[in-house]
Image (cartoon, rainbow, N blue to C red; front, side, top):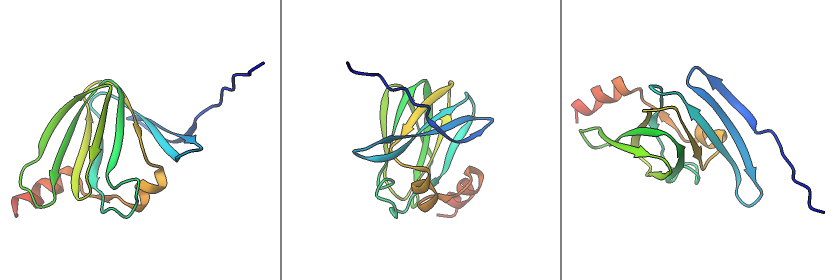
Length: 135
């Protein structure tokens, strides 16, 4: 007889936008599942490639819709892609990006919270907009 095992996911953080959960896969390590409420934003940063799991950053939008705002560090225009789930999103290093939840949504980041802490350079959107005016 085969048993079904049900385990709770590890809650790693929660705020007014939603919740983050880690899940483990023995083949690949820790990843994060995130929920976001419509109108909230995440990101506003770029990655330098210090973590293999952020070079490139890969996430899967599991449900809902999100705008991905992005701009290369040497570019002068923030572009926007509307992404509808299900979709795989890949962000190269040295590209500033922000996810804006158009609807309530959830996504899976193919990295851990430790990868985020090791390889994220935060630049708030307002500050980034000022920075690209001077390029």
